[in-house]
Amino acid sequence: MQVRVRYAPSPTGYQHVGGVRTALFNYLFARAHNGRFILRIEDTDQERFREDALEDIYRTFDWLGFHWDEGPDVDGPYAPYLQSQRTEIYRKYAEQLTASGNAYYCYCSPERLEKLRNGGTEGTKSSGYDRRCRNLSAQEQAELAGRGLTRVIRFKVPLEGSTSFYDELLGNIETANKDINPDPVLLKSDGLPTYHLANVIDDHLMEISHILRAQEWLPSCSLHTLIYQALEWTPPKFCHLPMVLGEDGQKLSKRHGATRIMEFREQGYLPEALINYVALLGWSFDDSREFFTLKELESVFSLEKLNKAPGVFDYKKLAWFNGNYIRKLPPEKLVSLLLPYLQRDSLVEDDPLPEQMELLSGLVPLVQERLTTLSEIPGLIGFLFKEIEEYNIEELIPKRLDKEQTLEVLKRVEQILKGFFDHSDEENEKIFRDLAKEMGIKLGDVLLPLRVALTGSRISPPLFESIRLLGQTRTLHRIERVIKLY
Image (cartoon, rainbow, N blue to C red; front, side):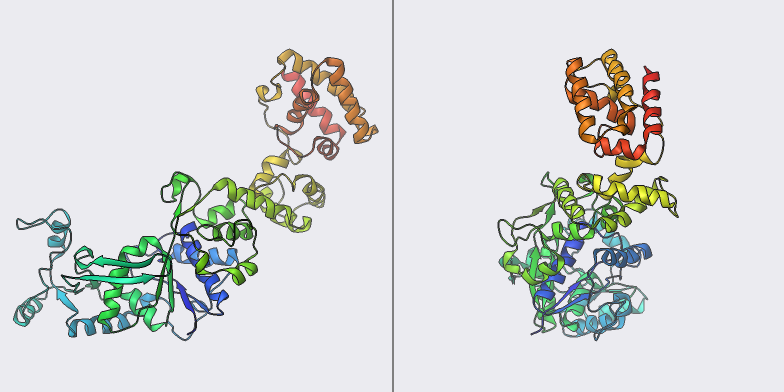
């Protein structure tokens, strides 16, 4: 049996970490078994459908760099892959379930259903639909239909017994039928299917062999198993993936930080780093190895190495991964990746000047070891491309010095800088060390005010290299400007 797996997002919102992790695991499982990875768009909820969310699906995976073998944009033998284009198929099987006695027409009005949701009606209290139309006689159905009432098709969940299925990660799972959503809608009054019907039919007709999805779908699996049984189909193998949580143990959400994939792109994360890190959320190869290319993941991924425990999304660990990937980039590649962030902050022209590109190329070796995200670059080297608008006096003062001592340091440093370009870096370092010794302070207390005066920040590329890139005129101008502030 060929492995066939699918990622089936609903275009009602943007792609987030959890969804992309599901897509990645499906893709890797398919590649590890020489199988097929399918994209199916579940767009039957037309009220919540968003065109920009659909576009975000394509943009996200274009950026991440892995793609499906079958889908709306590449076609395939089981097209169409947009559920909104498969409505006749769903209607056919919904009516088949009705004819076989496994489903029934329901004529309850929206108002009555709303009362049920709000705590019951007609003196009863219900935790869901009360199955009022489940046992209507043929005559009663004909009468209701004759009145022109809208109707839906509901599935008949057995009233007794239990339903079980096997999960490749969690083992055998059994649910009492009384605990399953009571008679859920399969086909809505507008003729569109609900998730439960479309999901089962498409997975069967598209010959999906394994369903890898998040554990939040676990409660629906018993219902889906019953639908498979009612249609006399063999279900795929199920594997409900561990959840992705924030560091507080709660489901990952916006309150933890960025979760939308395009946000990570905007913040300057590399797709290779994000894929590597996301692959380790609930899966591990061994206890020591952490770095994998996508190609390597394709060859080593297996369900046996999934963890039952949730994966915890650690933003600091992701930044660490990203920094490692940045350091591996060829300098010319890094220049091209950094350029848009400098242009975004108007530090570099849209059509960069030759001198700007020369400056950037000279800077990359100085900052490559310090970057954790690409978006840090304007704050790190912006001082070379534009004047510092204002200084924070407190930032200029080392902890061990006061304002007057700092001013004295800056005046002495100004004199040294006038001859800085006549000496090597080794000679300049000795000159600054001698100054610190003469003043009875530490070398860091001399260099900190100088760094802030020249760059506007306590964090910068190596100081002496920065001075040489600034040039003597700009260097002295900034020192003089800061001295005047005192």
